[in-house]
Length: 318
Image 1 (cartoon, rainbow, N blue to C red):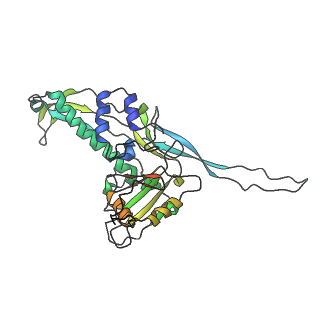
Image 2 (cartoon, rainbow, N blue to C red; image 1 turned 135 degrees about the vertical axis):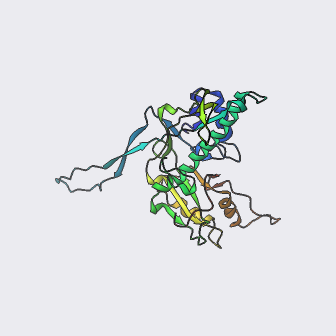
Image 3 (tube, rainbow, N blue to C red; image 1 turned 45 degrees about the horizontal axis):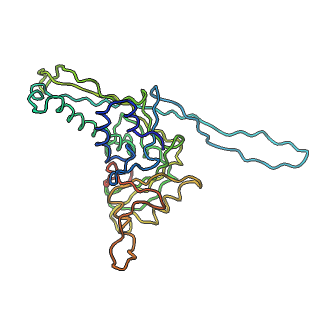
């Protein structure tokens, strides 16, 4: 397993930040790599790397030649593969927060605790933003940001999509199968993985009417991006709804897994709680008591990871 966002924060040596990240990313396992229900790190999930700058190019082999046989005393044509470069970019994520000094100084625990509490909420929002960006990219309807990086929805190949056939508008959901790794899907953090908050300082801020007051101020700079080495490392089930027969089933999961080339297995299936429940409901209990089947934790040995970053209100055109 490669670096996770927790490893990057630890390498930066800021204990307070590590504590905050550990508490705020459990609901976004695609970022943290932590299963939100068990608290266990899922192998391969949230693989990440840091770069000193803000972008780099990958070299992708896009085609191989047909290798010919030949007769004795004959020559054969020289062969070569086809390649292309792909630019992987990081983007500026710059949360800022402030607290009125007059209010903060009255806190029984001190202004430092109040600022730390505020930082915790801002960091939670930042990592939840990364979780939504991971899937929806610049689609603002589902929580993506127009100035952020492209998500899986922007790069998934149509040949790697299973259509569940749901028909009720705006009730769709997706299941994503993802292969992580250096050549596959991984998080990229520019500026050597910088994510430390600045020191707290005091400055004038202005209210809605433009009147100044003194506040404690802090901000944070991150440079996140997403590498998808090839479309063959991600696959999707779309249009999962509550319509009869249009929810998640083992047959659809099998069709999703079949999308991957031989020799490539995803590291995790990401889905909503609703989709996992649908998968459970599609199964027949085979015990003496007739008790319903348990909620599944994996499919064919590949972890099922529930996330709050995915929506149950996707448009059927998405």
